[in-house]
Length: 237
Image (tube, rainbow, N blue to C red):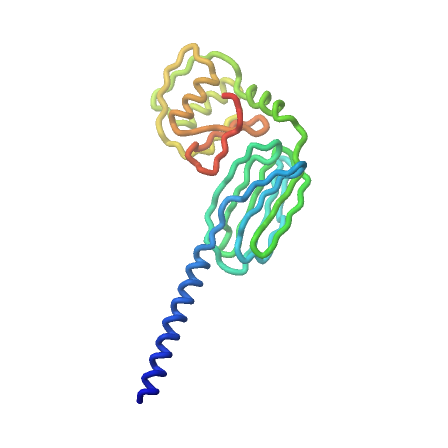
């Protein structure tokens, strides 16, 4: 009788330990999340590295020369916890990397470039690495281009409760600016400016509404400043 009670006690202890172990394993698996890539730079090469658990395959499944972009499909052996995000870069070629979940075991990484790069892609059980050659263009040349993308002119501007899209459309039409609205702002814009520099009023409108901008080629892209993955271009405003 005593031996029987002892055996039952041992079984209960074993079941308790097994339950705890299973709970720990489940919490570890559910905690495996995909975040933004790590960016590293060496003498002639830049590299992006994503940490993704249980990778089954990672390969280039699409590309475009104009506009320059590369798509990488990633498949995993197990389900992962992942969400869509974008990260922006201020390099001579790469300017944006996006991550889009396609299923519980699949995702699409899209890289956007100013010029199609020479690259190498590598993957392991837990990482995807994309390395590409640096452009030799000088940073000073980039700054000159960026500063000239907004016309250096004095303007009169009047809006009363207009939407951001209406304001951008008017500026684009009147001053030949290529503007792309990638923000979520719905706040009405009221402005009454006379004889003000276009760069000054443009930046003021964006900053007042929690927005910022960066440029690629000849396009100004407006986005939310609070996006923690947005890196502002190193431009003289």
